[in-house]
Image 1: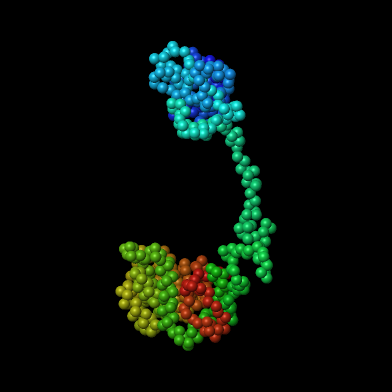
Image 2: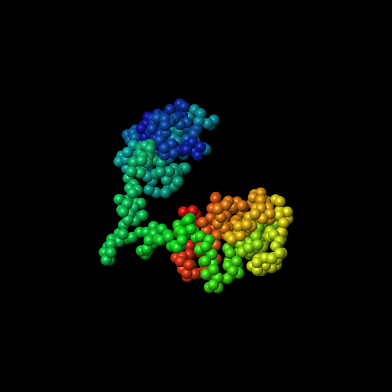
Length: 475
């Protein structure tokens, strides 16, 4: 009887631990209560071994997917009846107590011979391949443990596995099928040769025009970077971050420019105020800007030492110190005592005294520890003899030994080396041909109108853009 099932396709459910197996019956041993399958599949995947043997104790359910020996089944089932669908044999706890067609090998039935329940062949099994599962059309339970979920498992795992899954995916061959040049040229609006695709004029149909993010839709004239020309070249040229050329001017031409502006109403007081605002803005940026000057950082107010001389450049520094003090910066003003001072110095000192900031006349009163910033306004364009004064030498020596960065406002042009080594230089209106070494040059707008530049022979277009202080680079 056991030989009648050889070659049949069965599905064996061994529970959640061992899983589902499908394969062709190769042998049935009634003595040891085992059944062997050749070319088995485990949970829908082909097993690496050619044959698997199951014990009756491990089989929870056995299904016949395709019965190979039709004649033997018909003879064996003559006295038991023939069913129209493949059978399902489930394990029970009483009665036959068989697992997958075999009686369980337990203490109650150790000597019972093997008994196989025969099922009639399905009507459409002869038209299917040896490894193809018969799909279930109805959802009725077939047997004791059957169900809709088991039928779906057969439909999913009963078919042969695609042998193409055993081969590796060829990434290089599939990548070669993708024409990257054509796709990117379509995105960029260029043809395969790199030429820009433009729509044809006159309303003809053509490739739509595509522009990059840095291209203008409207045609514009070429950019002219030399927009400032001077009658007398100062000997040095600078350029802005946007590439505009800013030539330097001599001190004589710069002096004529300021005198012409003063005749038109840009008085010295207004120029001092404008210079103080621009210089204080630059100093606040150098001190850290919004990262340093916050309400939560009042216990660490920056300290600025302001070194001024008794001249217009000193008045510009005092104006800058007043604006810094108004922005909660601790300012220490150094100004030597003189019997008579210029009116601009006196006026700026009167305003500075209202800020409650400190003013000293001796180098000994300046802080010994390094400050956050030193602003140098000791030098004058016209009185070079001040460099030999004792107070000047002492102040310059203190600034060089303090190890704080130095900002020089409107330094003069001289053939000698600067007494105070500056890290930044701030020029007014147009730069002078300074020999600042490694110092970075900045330019501030002091409000001179364009026609005033033209009166002194300067063809001027503002290089400042949206700012009042811009950096200059050596051209």
